[in-house]
Amino acid sequence: MRFTAHIDVLPLDEILDPQGKAVLLGLQHLHIAGVQDVRIGRSVMMTLEADTEAEASQKVEQACQKLLANPIMERFTFELTAA
Image (cartoon, rainbow, N blue to C red):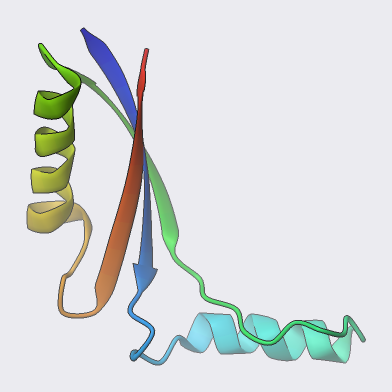
């Protein structure tokens, strides 16, 4: 089966996010009120082959842990859909 994984990688909450802070300041200068925090990350879309959804999930988890996210500074979430 073919699956598509939509992966979001974001800095850990404890880590300073200079890009997010810059965007937050920009929003304040544009008088866009009510925004309290901005975190900038990246989005990855991966298409993969696997026999089951569990196998696909395991492959995506490994890819995130070993390559796509730095576990010291980042966290990741993903959603699998059948393609």
